[in-house]
Image (cartoon, rainbow, N blue to C red; front, side, top):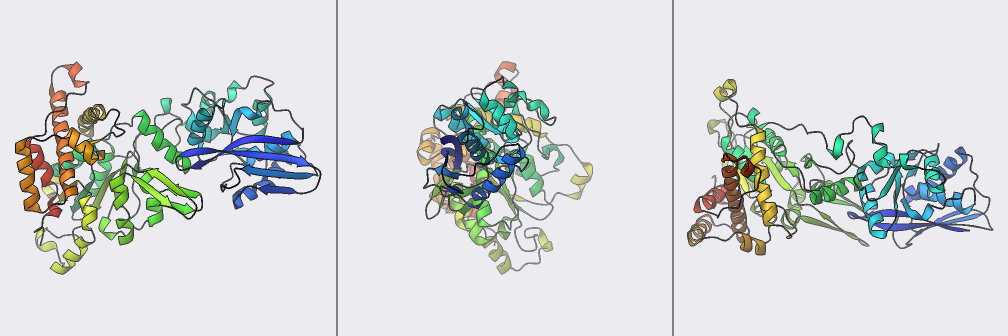
Amino acid sequence: MLVNITGAKSVGIDAVAVTVEVSIDRGIGVHLVGLADAAVKESLLRTVTALQSRGFHVPGKKIVINLAPADMRKNGSGYDLPIALGIIAASDQRQMPGLGKYIIMGELGLDASVRDVPGALPVAELAIKSGFEGCILPLNSAREAAEFRGLRIFGVKSLDEVLLILEESEDCSDYLVWNRMDLFQEDLPSGEEPVGNYVDFACIAGQEGAKRGAEIAAAGGHNLIMIGAPGSGKTSLAKAIAGILPPMTAEESLVTSKLYSIVGKRGAGGGLMRSRPFRAPHYSASMVSLIGGGSGDNILPGEVSLAHNGVLFLDELAQMPKSTLEALRNPIEDRRVVISRLKSKIEYPCSFMLVAASNPCPCGYYGEGERCSCSEGRVRNYLARLSGPIMDRIDLQVWMHPVATSSLIKKASGEPSSAIAARVKLAREIQKRRFDGEGIFTNAEMSPGQTERFCSLSDECNDMIQRIIDNMGLSARAYSRIIRLARTIADMEAARMALDTPDAVMRDRAPDAGPILPAHIAEAAAYRFLDRRDFGL
């Protein structure tokens, strides 16, 4: 007897259907075919033991298990559950009329418990596109897709629960994942996630210029590098930036959640991610961990993709291996990363906001008077690690000097993150309305054509930026980034004016964006001091 069960495999951020075909006929032996990796082949022994633990027998006949399509490599332990169900159905030990209505994935324990598998969100999306009634997934995995209320998503903990659902002999609505969320006391309502360990801007003494740059970067999604002596507050400011970013839109949340679902890194809360990711890999991270990679068809996203729609913080940027640092060029520019192998090519989105920090020299105190013990050559060589092509892709370059001791002792409270976050949110609302239907969300994501359409300049602004480019010797890429940054500064000005209005209704509505003024161009260009021909030495 031949039985078909539908599973799935993640390819990039999407899933493709995998049909688990189980045939039992005269002969002997259990045969697994269909380009299965070691984890899938090991599933046979797990599956047989799990079936026997629940009183099922494995027929002493020839059992052929085919994972179709046969030309695509299958990996992971998620095919345990479909294989077990196929053996039960093909040997007529149970009647399961609902077997063809669901996509089924799950790892089996030796006691027939069902364990988590990655990729629940892409699987749920595939079920919708392919017309299935729903999915049967391990409980923790199913929680990721809890917001797909138009789909019957069952979260199960054992093989017995799966059989009860597929036999359709009684009402199993209690196993729908949104009816089982009470099993998790740590869950938050509506898929919300706990607030991260962010630093409040009010706790950062001084550094008003750097705070202004951080606010601009957050408002437009621009890349930022902070250069300064140890203890000047670079890391604290980077953590504070994560606390002023607005929640993700529904579209951003879905894509980001799918990336985390693929690698099995979803948090405790059910549903989609709401808070923007903040990734901070160590500077010794390998190129594969940063960009993504893997062998064969098992290509996983790296840190640049896990920071999609959020922040990628790279501390001690100048200490990173040169090859790893240079590999960031295309992801920063294209906002996607394409990983190619001999038989496969996978594309992952990586529209992140790069926040980097670095010391200016080996001792860390260049620019701080006599505290620096480095020679001119050592300083040049150290800064040379930050190559021109990488710095060209960073919109804001901020120099941070250590805060005076008197400012630290006084502990004067600055503007809190909540006030800054309100301006950032309103500036983002302006951009959201501007780019409606364009497929982007922030000014930093604009293509050259979009920059020309949405960033019109007056003759006075054109004359000013021409003089700046000629005097500083900037590249064409830097020219475009200055214009985009000026557009963000203009949006922030409009947001500030709207928040200052006494009309409460106007404060809650995104205002019209103002024009780009010469003052905005001048401020944007001032953040590119590392590009000057005569900088530093």
